[in-house]
Length: 422
Image (tube, rainbow, N blue to C red; front, side):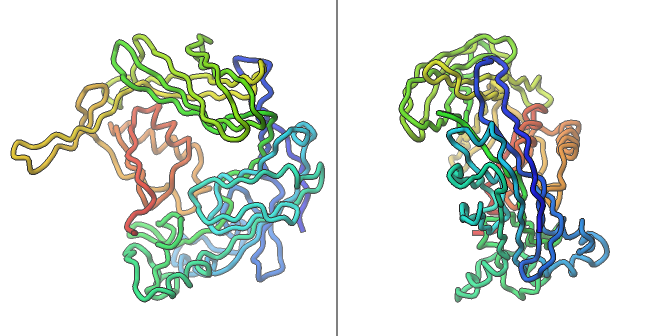
């Protein structure tokens, strides 16, 4: 039914502290197969991917962007689908104290089974799903199965149970054979999948972002956030906040350094308790190089090397880029007191915002390559834009998109993903 795969291990290297034993990440991207649950035939699958692109790759679905093929693709969202792979765990990963299975994106209603044990029940396309799985893993022959429920089968009963209709003028329910039953409002899923005035109705399911095993000992960073404040040409206050998971109570040190020069900005003793912790360090940059919007100056980015030592040994490191800038929304009352301004200042300077409404690059998100992201952001920069609105009928975009905007001096107006729905 499916082939076993052997996964290589990538361990994040510490560029500034060689003794660190980093979090190991194993990407589970090979050997996947899929089937229509009502069927018997298994076909090769690509992960990350979605059902529509896998069907197209196997010659089972015509390109819905050609001719009238969109209509012929409407059966896909009425079916349940199953994805399966098997894998071995390298000894360098299997021996670690903690192992976590992470799905960076599941679209949308999914049950995940590892060695026949259900470990994840997903119902939100926009978030990450994870499970602690060390107790379930074997050195060899692990089976990972993802059961994707039809979004129509899940959400149509919710619609039918109501004696009123939620407004969703974008939802092309008629094209999907659902009459006027607009079910998009019931799913935490990209609204444009259900159709929009500019795009087709292609309601996807799939494993749309990477699947990763993460393994570590003792303590690790869950997240690291750099926040500048009080930014002027003379100085900038920088606050670094880290979310840390620790297997036990311990003494630690949070260190922040310049990733290029190695200059240490802060070393803060921290006390860790077993479980979730929030720790922080702060410092002041003198005469900082400021980040400016496109057209007003250089969008300079600092790269901060953040490390956590526990009982004298480096437990984890992160490299975080951040620009030193002050952004202020100015709301000043009109002379007659009946209204207020709505303008932005960056580093104390009023900025005329020039930009566009940014929608997803493709109906099938896994076809959006790094090259396509680089192209669209470069086009916005070269057109003298300095702000893009990430539209609320799409997705919270890939980290690469935001990184490229940072590099290009483009501010982000970030919608919540609730466009045209309650």
